[in-house]
Image (cartoon, rainbow, N blue to C red):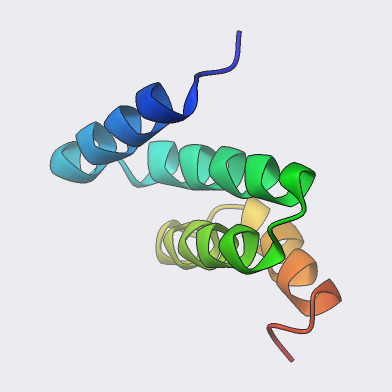
Length: 77
């Protein structure tokens, strides 16, 4: 069951405090997906950028997909 926005925000803060970078990738991606579904591309890209940075920092495979999503939105070269 997806988290509501307040729960998602709380989970993001908890993951930051715990330095759970894998969790941050997942949660920021979920936040980006929500904003994109609402048509708020600026907010979606904000969250995608965070997910991408944490994915790069941890060498996660999702980094390539997140990078492509940013490129598709003209936010990355």
